[in-house]
Image (cartoon, rainbow, N blue to C red; front, side, top):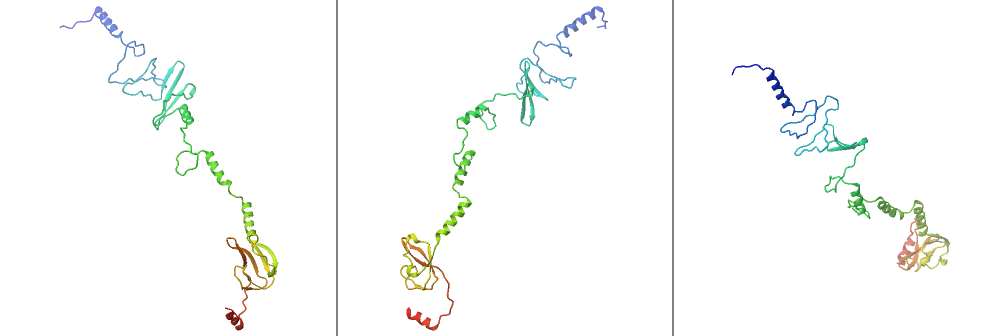
Length: 265
């Protein structure tokens, strides 16, 4: 076929064909799309020449059936003049902020796992129903929390029975004074009969004497003047005089005294 030139009629027809073809296209500077846009095997990049970057606005839902919605800064949900921003606040952490920068509340379901979030109402209901176990007594094995009231009551009960320093000193003085009660000096013949009411009484015997059946040492023991004796309970209900340690005569025995002791046995 020989090459032909395009005249005015041909150019007019070509212009009509181009206009018809472009009439269904969206201008790159912007416009309105009334039909459905399907993008398969490709990405949609939204960019802008200003510092804020590009935006995607939707009156309805933005969903990802088998993938994820990713935003470099934040994901915003708008409802009139109200909005909520979802931003990344760190590893595995999200920050939800509403109008004015305050944190927005988020409905949380009943927790079932250890890492699930819960609500104030859920915690309050558990506490009111006894969901928090508190020990009523001290325990070395319990893992439950123990109230300060329980600890204080336990300590108070232990401390209340202790004596003060002054009370301890008074008790010691009373015990010491109760062991021996000095009754002064007395002749052996005037020594009273040992009884329960005289336990602890101490006498200084002013004359030499020989013990009788009222003495713990038994009968026949000789002691010099100045010997101290104390009333003691020998056995249950049985009382007697007990000679306290006195002076020891270190004078050497004579042959006559040894003979006398030998003859007395």
